[in-house]
Image (cartoon, rainbow, N blue to C red):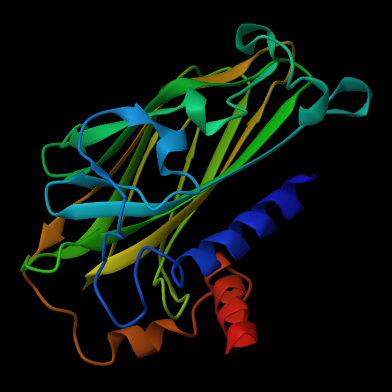
Length: 260
Protein backbone atom coordinates (compact mmCIF):
# COMPACT_ATOMS: atom_id res chain seq x y z
CA UNK A 1 0.00 0.00 0.00
CA UNK A 2 1.48 3.35 -1.02
CA UNK A 3 1.36 6.53 0.98
CA UNK A 4 -1.63 8.00 -0.83
CA UNK A 5 -3.74 4.86 -0.56
CA UNK A 6 -2.92 4.38 3.13
CA UNK A 7 -4.03 7.92 3.84
CA UNK A 8 -7.18 7.53 1.73
CA UNK A 9 -8.13 4.36 3.62
CA UNK A 10 -7.71 6.15 6.93
CA UNK A 11 -9.89 9.02 5.69
CA UNK A 12 -12.65 6.61 4.71
CA UNK A 13 -12.43 4.72 8.00
CA UNK A 14 -12.48 7.96 9.94
CA UNK A 15 -15.49 9.20 8.00
CA UNK A 16 -17.39 6.01 8.73
CA UNK A 17 -16.50 6.05 12.43
CA UNK A 18 -18.64 9.06 13.27
CA UNK A 19 -21.72 7.19 12.06
CA UNK A 20 -20.80 4.12 14.08
CA UNK A 21 -20.70 3.27 17.73
CA UNK A 22 -19.18 6.41 19.22
CA UNK A 23 -21.67 9.17 18.49
CA UNK A 24 -24.53 9.97 16.18
CA UNK A 25 -24.42 13.19 14.14
CA UNK A 26 -27.13 14.88 16.21
CA UNK A 27 -26.10 13.70 19.67
CA UNK A 28 -23.23 13.95 22.13
CA UNK A 29 -20.85 11.05 22.62
CA UNK A 30 -22.53 7.99 24.14
CA UNK A 31 -20.58 5.09 25.62
CA UNK A 32 -21.81 1.80 24.20
CA UNK A 33 -22.75 -1.17 26.42
CA UNK A 34 -19.68 -3.15 27.44
CA UNK A 35 -17.26 -0.39 26.43
CA UNK A 36 -14.72 1.27 28.71
CA UNK A 37 -13.57 4.85 29.12
CA UNK A 38 -9.89 4.81 30.11
CA UNK A 39 -8.28 7.64 32.07
CA UNK A 40 -4.77 6.25 32.70
CA UNK A 41 -2.07 5.20 30.20
CA UNK A 42 -2.94 2.21 28.00
CA UNK A 43 -1.74 0.72 24.72
CA UNK A 44 -3.38 2.20 21.65
CA UNK A 45 -4.74 -1.15 20.45
CA UNK A 46 -7.37 -0.96 23.21
CA UNK A 47 -8.83 2.05 21.38
CA UNK A 48 -8.64 0.71 17.82
CA UNK A 49 -11.60 -1.17 16.39
CA UNK A 50 -13.42 -1.07 19.73
CA UNK A 51 -16.13 1.00 21.38
CA UNK A 52 -13.64 2.15 24.02
CA UNK A 53 -12.65 5.76 24.57
CA UNK A 54 -10.07 7.79 26.49
CA UNK A 55 -11.09 10.70 28.71
CA UNK A 56 -8.98 13.60 29.94
CA UNK A 57 -10.90 16.07 32.11
CA UNK A 58 -13.98 17.05 30.06
CA UNK A 59 -12.64 15.78 26.70
CA UNK A 60 -13.46 12.32 25.35
CA UNK A 61 -11.21 10.86 22.63
CA UNK A 62 -12.69 8.06 20.54
CA UNK A 63 -12.94 6.40 17.10
CA UNK A 64 -9.18 6.11 16.71
CA UNK A 65 -7.69 5.30 13.29
CA UNK A 66 -4.25 3.72 12.71
CA UNK A 67 -3.14 2.82 9.13
CA UNK A 68 0.50 2.17 8.18
CA UNK A 69 2.49 1.86 4.97
CA UNK A 70 6.23 1.56 4.41
CA UNK A 71 8.77 1.08 1.65
CA UNK A 72 12.40 0.01 1.71
CA UNK A 73 15.30 -1.03 -0.53
CA UNK A 74 14.43 -3.54 -3.23
CA UNK A 75 10.71 -2.74 -3.08
CA UNK A 76 10.38 -4.11 0.44
CA UNK A 77 7.15 -3.27 2.28
CA UNK A 78 5.73 -3.61 5.78
CA UNK A 79 4.65 -7.17 4.95
CA UNK A 80 8.28 -8.20 4.48
CA UNK A 81 9.37 -7.12 7.97
CA UNK A 82 6.27 -7.78 10.06
CA UNK A 83 7.63 -11.05 11.48
CA UNK A 84 10.93 -9.54 12.63
CA UNK A 85 11.37 -8.79 16.34
CA UNK A 86 10.19 -5.21 16.97
CA UNK A 87 13.71 -4.00 17.79
CA UNK A 88 15.02 -5.37 14.47
CA UNK A 89 12.41 -3.78 12.23
CA UNK A 90 13.73 -0.89 10.12
CA UNK A 91 10.52 1.08 10.72
CA UNK A 92 8.20 1.44 13.71
CA UNK A 93 5.50 1.27 14.96
CA UNK A 94 3.72 -1.25 12.76
CA UNK A 95 0.99 -2.01 15.29
CA UNK A 96 -1.06 0.17 17.67
CA UNK A 97 -0.11 -2.14 20.54
CA UNK A 98 3.37 -0.56 20.37
CA UNK A 99 2.04 2.93 21.17
CA UNK A 100 1.19 4.06 24.71
CA UNK A 101 -1.59 6.62 25.11
CA UNK A 102 -1.85 8.74 28.24
CA UNK A 103 -3.27 12.06 29.45
CA UNK A 104 -1.49 15.35 28.90
CA UNK A 105 -2.02 18.79 30.41
CA UNK A 106 -0.14 21.99 29.53
CA UNK A 107 3.01 20.10 28.53
CA UNK A 108 3.52 22.13 25.36
CA UNK A 109 3.13 25.50 27.06
CA UNK A 110 1.44 26.96 30.13
CA UNK A 111 -1.88 27.39 28.32
CA UNK A 112 -1.92 24.61 25.71
CA UNK A 113 -4.73 22.78 27.46
CA UNK A 114 -5.47 19.09 27.85
CA UNK A 115 -5.09 16.18 25.47
CA UNK A 116 -3.06 13.07 24.71
CA UNK A 117 0.54 12.04 25.35
CA UNK A 118 1.67 9.30 22.93
CA UNK A 119 4.91 7.48 23.57
CA UNK A 120 6.80 5.06 21.29
CA UNK A 121 9.85 4.81 19.06
CA UNK A 122 8.64 6.24 15.75
CA UNK A 123 11.50 5.59 13.33
CA UNK A 124 12.65 4.89 9.79
CA UNK A 125 16.13 3.52 9.16
CA UNK A 126 18.28 4.79 6.26
CA UNK A 127 16.70 3.87 2.93
CA UNK A 128 13.26 3.33 4.45
CA UNK A 129 10.08 5.40 4.36
CA UNK A 130 7.40 4.96 7.03
CA UNK A 131 3.94 6.46 6.74
CA UNK A 132 1.16 6.47 9.31
CA UNK A 133 -2.35 7.87 9.01
CA UNK A 134 -3.46 8.43 12.59
CA UNK A 135 -6.63 10.07 13.81
CA UNK A 136 -9.36 10.34 16.41
CA UNK A 137 -12.47 12.33 17.32
CA UNK A 138 -12.69 14.65 20.33
CA UNK A 139 -15.96 15.46 22.12
CA UNK A 140 -16.54 17.82 25.02
CA UNK A 141 -18.68 16.04 27.61
CA UNK A 142 -22.34 16.99 27.40
CA UNK A 143 -22.63 18.80 30.74
CA UNK A 144 -19.57 21.01 30.17
CA UNK A 145 -19.94 24.66 29.20
CA UNK A 146 -16.54 24.62 27.49
CA UNK A 147 -15.76 24.73 23.75
CA UNK A 148 -12.56 23.61 22.01
CA UNK A 149 -10.88 26.70 20.58
CA UNK A 150 -7.45 25.58 19.36
CA UNK A 151 -5.05 22.69 18.83
CA UNK A 152 -1.41 22.29 19.84
CA UNK A 153 1.04 19.73 18.44
CA UNK A 154 4.54 18.81 19.60
CA UNK A 155 7.03 16.04 18.86
CA UNK A 156 10.21 15.17 20.74
CA UNK A 157 12.93 13.51 18.71
CA UNK A 158 16.11 13.83 16.69
CA UNK A 159 16.86 16.32 13.92
CA UNK A 160 18.25 13.59 11.65
CA UNK A 161 16.51 12.12 8.63
CA UNK A 162 13.24 13.67 7.48
CA UNK A 163 10.06 13.93 9.54
CA UNK A 164 6.81 15.31 8.13
CA UNK A 165 3.54 15.58 10.04
CA UNK A 166 0.55 17.15 8.31
CA UNK A 167 -2.60 17.48 10.38
CA UNK A 168 -6.16 18.54 9.63
CA UNK A 169 -8.67 19.53 12.30
CA UNK A 170 -12.17 19.18 10.86
CA UNK A 171 -15.84 19.11 11.72
CA UNK A 172 -16.85 15.43 12.12
CA UNK A 173 -20.23 15.94 10.45
CA UNK A 174 -19.68 18.33 7.54
CA UNK A 175 -16.01 17.54 6.95
CA UNK A 176 -15.21 21.26 6.89
CA UNK A 177 -11.57 21.91 7.73
CA UNK A 178 -11.22 24.13 10.80
CA UNK A 179 -7.43 24.32 10.99
CA UNK A 180 -4.19 22.81 9.71
CA UNK A 181 -1.02 22.05 11.68
CA UNK A 182 2.37 20.67 10.74
CA UNK A 183 5.63 19.54 12.31
CA UNK A 184 9.02 18.32 11.12
CA UNK A 185 12.51 17.52 12.35
CA UNK A 186 13.21 21.28 12.30
CA UNK A 187 9.78 22.49 13.43
CA UNK A 188 8.72 20.45 16.44
CA UNK A 189 5.82 22.60 17.70
CA UNK A 190 2.75 24.04 15.98
CA UNK A 191 -0.50 25.69 17.04
CA UNK A 192 -3.72 26.76 15.33
CA UNK A 193 -6.83 28.57 16.55
CA UNK A 194 -10.36 28.15 15.22
CA UNK A 195 -13.94 29.10 16.07
CA UNK A 196 -14.95 27.33 19.31
CA UNK A 197 -16.74 24.01 18.77
CA UNK A 198 -17.95 21.08 20.87
CA UNK A 199 -16.42 18.30 18.76
CA UNK A 200 -13.65 17.91 16.23
CA UNK A 201 -11.93 15.27 14.14
CA UNK A 202 -8.12 15.09 14.10
CA UNK A 203 -6.37 13.29 11.24
CA UNK A 204 -2.62 13.43 10.77
CA UNK A 205 -0.31 12.00 8.12
CA UNK A 206 3.01 11.11 9.72
CA UNK A 207 5.95 10.31 7.43
CA UNK A 208 9.50 9.44 8.45
CA UNK A 209 12.23 9.04 5.86
CA UNK A 210 15.72 7.76 6.62
CA UNK A 211 18.07 9.78 4.42
CA UNK A 212 21.80 10.33 3.95
CA UNK A 213 22.63 7.36 6.14
CA UNK A 214 20.61 8.83 9.02
CA UNK A 215 17.61 7.43 10.87
CA UNK A 216 14.50 9.60 11.16
CA UNK A 217 13.14 9.26 14.68
CA UNK A 218 10.99 10.75 17.41
CA UNK A 219 9.76 9.25 20.67
CA UNK A 220 6.95 11.48 21.94
CA UNK A 221 3.92 13.07 20.31
CA UNK A 222 1.78 15.47 22.35
CA UNK A 223 -1.60 16.78 21.21
CA UNK A 224 -3.41 19.31 23.41
CA UNK A 225 -6.51 21.47 23.08
CA UNK A 226 -7.40 24.55 25.07
CA UNK A 227 -10.95 25.73 25.60
CA UNK A 228 -13.27 28.64 26.25
CA UNK A 229 -16.85 29.29 27.36
CA UNK A 230 -17.44 31.36 24.22
CA UNK A 231 -20.02 29.83 21.88
CA UNK A 232 -19.52 29.77 18.09
CA UNK A 233 -20.74 32.77 16.11
CA UNK A 234 -23.84 32.10 13.93
CA UNK A 235 -22.94 31.20 10.37
CA UNK A 236 -19.29 30.43 11.12
CA UNK A 237 -19.54 26.74 10.34
CA UNK A 238 -21.37 27.38 7.07
CA UNK A 239 -18.56 29.64 5.95
CA UNK A 240 -16.01 26.95 6.60
CA UNK A 241 -17.59 24.58 4.08
CA UNK A 242 -15.78 26.32 1.26
CA UNK A 243 -12.32 25.66 2.66
CA UNK A 244 -9.95 23.17 1.08
CA UNK A 245 -11.57 21.43 -1.91
CA UNK A 246 -8.72 18.92 -2.00
CA UNK A 247 -8.40 18.59 1.77
CA UNK A 248 -9.19 15.72 4.08
CA UNK A 249 -12.38 17.56 4.93
CA UNK A 250 -13.48 17.42 1.30
CA UNK A 251 -12.78 13.70 1.09
CA UNK A 252 -14.85 13.09 4.20
CA UNK A 253 -17.64 15.27 2.83
CA UNK A 254 -17.77 13.21 -0.38
CA UNK A 255 -17.86 10.05 1.72
CA UNK A 256 -20.91 11.29 3.60
CA UNK A 257 -22.61 12.22 0.31
CA UNK A 258 -22.22 8.65 -0.96
CA UNK A 259 -23.85 7.29 2.19
CA UNK A 260 -26.85 9.63 1.96
